[in-house]
Amino acid sequence: MPDKEILLGHSPDPDDAFMFYGLTSGKVPSEGYVIKHLLSDIETLNQYATNGKLDLTAISLHAYAYVKSHYALMACGASMGMGYGPIIVATKPMTIEELERATIAVPGTMTTAFLVLRMVLGHFDYQVIPFDKILFQVAGGSVDAGLIIHEGQVNYGQMELLNVLDLGKWWSDQTGLPLPLGVNAVKRDLGPAVMKDLSRLVLRSIEYGMENPEEALDFAQDYARGLDRQQLETFVRMYVNQWTLRCGPEGTKAINELLYRAETERLIPPTLPVDFV
Image (cartoon, rainbow, N blue to C red):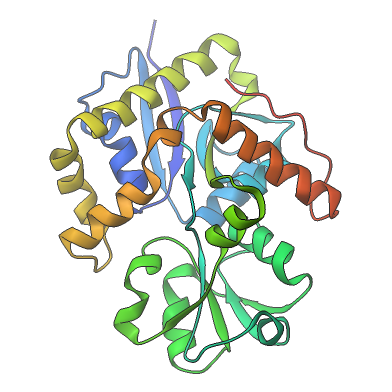
């Protein structure tokens, strides 16, 4: 019987590279599956998921509200942080009231960062700009502020920008919970057995990276986009942590709370309850 081909989508980012290193390198055997990696930015992966293009993919938790009928969440692979998260940067200090009146560059309207910013500001004026261009747009004055995800959270200071709002801190102050940003989703029509197999393989890949961090960091360096080794390690450790291995009770509570609040504010369609593989 030929191996079953699985199309796996994830971001070309250091944390995803670290997580999937075991599978990418072959250090974690794929057990009869041929894993084809498709690398793209998270907003594109969100769009692919809405079209059912990918068998297994990293998506924003926000996007799950729109793909739940086709995908279930894995209990591993989540990106969460306690007391930190996506940030708003600007060239000068800005209050919440000033941000409400500002034009803010955002990396996509299906990102969880965008959803949380809507919770903070309500409706606001925004421009969708690729995530890796936002720092330059803010520094150049094309927009008043920028919503920063990925490695920009650790190197924005190199462009003399200021962190004027940390969404992860805002969320933890509100809830006492980590902020769930990215999750792994697996296609339901693969069937329960394959879904469980793939969840186990992803977990083993994460475990391999955590057990062999220098090896996985060496691989992730190729996706660092200007981060030095110390910055790379800082960023990876921000989002590859205990909740990445298993959501557990606290991570599950955080996911449910975010979706519940978004539902209550009518920012997403009805989504709860969440089912995990």
